[in-house]
Image (cartoon, rainbow, N blue to C red; front, side, top):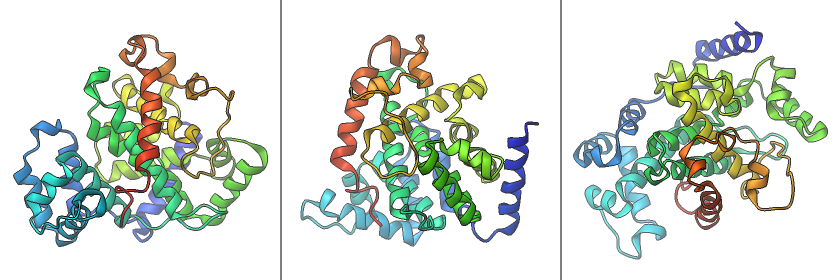
Length: 308
């Protein structure tokens, strides 16, 4: 086994054994995970409603969201079914995922100007971008719900390492800012492994779907993942790259701009765009979808999904 994977296993096990800084997922999260593996039109609203009603915290969160200025249009509701219908089944599920993970995981420590707020803004943006890439019209096989979770959790390894050893992780940030190295290169120098590989082991211990674990663990290196996970991994890489190159969220990760041209020039090295056989590329839809994702983020960043 490569040294970086051995170190990832050691760090992940140390974190899991402590059981303090990175807690296990609540039962409600595990139930929600079952739903992401279903097409949205196969999800029974009655089952979702029951799940929410059994968790008073989730119940309050959905009512709060439904009565927010974004959804309410000045009309208040106290009915859970009405709230779900107002928000929409897809947005209700995704808001629940965001809320559960955000309130289960510890806060990102304030390190070198980067904080919990920036972390979750980036997570939300990657989730929304990845979900958009799951549109069936783009001829992808991955489900939008799975892509949303993969995008939401793609950076969880950064949070895990920052909480596990904040001083060492801050060293990584300093290396990035002073040398222009990638985060992975800095982490290999300081930790002997990468945050993505550590995250893979943690998510695996939570019994998350294997394809989501693979997307989080290997989105930066799609060429090294098993073929059955290649699409969700490479789509997640594309979504995260669009978010970072757009400049719409704050991130300490260094991204090289190849030119001042719109985004596709800077995405030319992304795995899926170099795969001429993928429908996203063969149909030419990637040209339009990149700009569309940026437009969605510009209009919605910080409006609904990031609300507490």
